[in-house]
Length: 213
Image 1 (cartoon, rainbow, N blue to C red):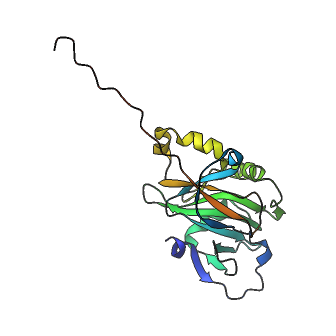
Image 2 (image 1 turned 60 degrees about the vertical axis):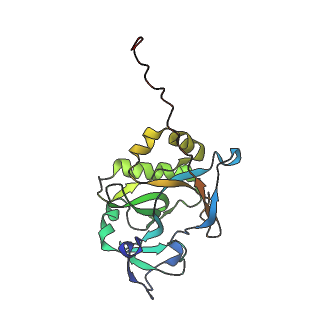
Image 3 (image 1 turned 135 degrees about the vertical axis):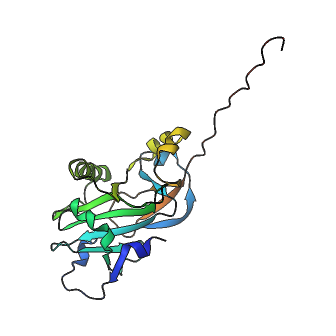
């Protein structure tokens, strides 16, 4: 559980906080599904084992607030350990993140969606348009220690990538599922867990003994 490492003080009331600017974080539907032809062009990401999702808002005064998935009526101050997020996102910005432990046991925050940037509302943009903005931020921004960009792509592309066992070794976290993302900033929408394809090592025939041995 990474919640205690993300949530700071519970905000009971703060007139300065604009709750409407906190992005809506969908819940994840129970159970798992498989990828289909109809879903191959859906936006999706790898879900780290044990990873937890959070919505974050940085207000005009650089105050950082956070909501855990499934608790849209609760608001917390973001724990100080994630302060370097301010080096990536300016005031009046909001994003969605996944917090997880890497294979080296380093607790990491992966930013996977962006709904507001410097007061500009990006919630009506398509998912991959927001991804382009996020990519530009990380490309032009400073190198951060515990905050990284969490890659989002087409579900089909992820499936193809995961067919190679060697690609799994390069992923910095353990994963057994993909997360199919919804395309709108709608609290009623839901994410879906998609089973990761099983990689079967290619058969290697045994070496033949020298003739006459």
